[in-house]
Amino acid sequence: MNQITSLAPLATVVVEISGGAIYCARASAPARIIILDHDVEGGDGDRVKEINGEEFYVHDFALTSPADPCGIDQGYVVDIVNQVDAGDGANEIKDGQGTLCLSNSIESVVPFLFEVGQYLLVAADYVKNKEVALARVKTEVERLEQFLQQDRDALLQRVREHYVNSEIEAADVMLNRTATN
Image 1 (cartoon, rainbow, N blue to C red):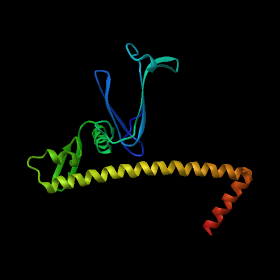
Image 2: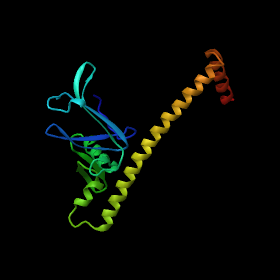
Image 3: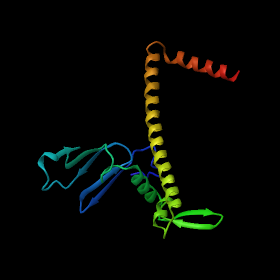
Image 4: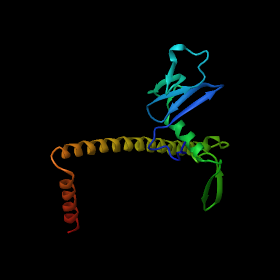
């Protein structure tokens, strides 16, 4: 499995498991989750299905509403992704005052500071809200890029109904010549 180092443009689902049972799932965007569990003993027979020639207990559910406690919770997912991406637990921040090693983002640390003032709490919330907004925008950009590619593919199919490849390529060359002159 490839390691992913960024939340966007992928929708991310965090599944919490305790004692082999799914405790909670939270997602950065609406998502369908299918979990194939090899442990089929004692499960509801209607949920045991043969998949790729093997029997699985199938957990199939959708996350479409805000977390309560499970559901869509972008802030929680972004925080988890940041912690996972921190790798060895050291996130070095270098500035004019030295080097600071954190395993969490500074905006997540602020509420745990001793007698932290309202000003810093508001600033931390502001940063968290920007991160959540950025995750939303990145998800929307990915969605729009998919629509753009679908529209390009559809246009190409329409063009191919009337022109052969050599005619399309000749028009491409003419465009390149026009653009360079």
